Length: 483
Image 1 (cartoon, helix red, strand yellow):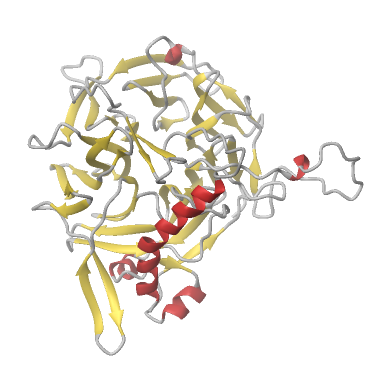
Image 2 (spheres, helix red, strand yellow):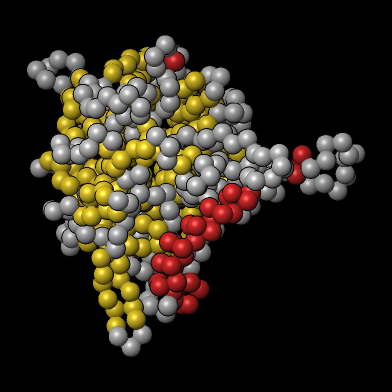
């Protein structure tokens, strides 16, 4: 059956992928691979159509490439072609973004529909000595107020009178009192994904989010902070939640990697914890925390031992539903491992959680105490090696979800009842082939640009509607204004 085949693929194929990766970099010259930050994989690009033969005479029949592809995704021109966009926060006629550059450091940009261009809006104070090492997530309550984060645990807050005025910036260092490791960064985890060490994966434990201008949160390392004002004084950051285990070993690290508000009364935070090895890096189990007016609750939490994740008392035990012909449908415990790096609310008390940047994920419902294994069918990243990570972000916009990953963007219906049964996201053909019912239908789109696959990570997708989507990542900021 399709479910059983998929589960076998998700475990057995990883070894084959590692072999493919080793072969891909074992030629005589070798490949120089620099790691891409924030969960990115590193893959050598194929030559673009323009680079195939730079010495040949122009061909009159060669296509004239548009800045937009057939699916409505348009490539915007960047102020520096080597910028890596980490996050984007869109409005109807403008968008903010935070990016990194080897030469410029951390930069903050604004796009306006009127100019059809990006411009820098920071004052460069974030790149002072001791700061700006890498960027985290950003949040903008309005077109005239903006938060962004940089290592080591610094939150920048900008305000302006109106869109025609310049931003005035102030910064504050989060009062982090967590573990100070001599051999690891509390705001950034890394691991070597392939046995021969050709791919290094990163995840940044730093960011800011909020539900309004008066309700703003930040995270760094293993702590969540909230911006509050007491006694009429100026707002300050205070630690509100810590993920740790006093009985953990010295080599174990705890992280908060991402957050997503569902409403003013519900915010989800995801992360991971586990040991860090000097050679292989961080290996851990996912964590999921839920904030409500009554405080924080632990939803997913595990104990890591010998490569396995055992559910802690009080947390939800992940499970998978399998149908065996002639015997019925069975629900069995499912062992999960890896980092939880993205989360999106799908209903009150329920969320979709991406673990290991994979096309496999969990539907979590706190009311029914369910953490159900699901997957995405019918979506193929452009690279032939299929090296992880494949999915970097997921966000909810109205009644749909949008995902971004390595060279891919796709949408989905929201169908909690189907996900509770483990039916996942897919195409009508894939559901018909499975013969076990229909899950959420995937909405396919292509971000192939100028006649070639986009073989780059897209770290974040966000939008204000289906007619105003952004997908940003390494050297690209793509805008889609068609439904």
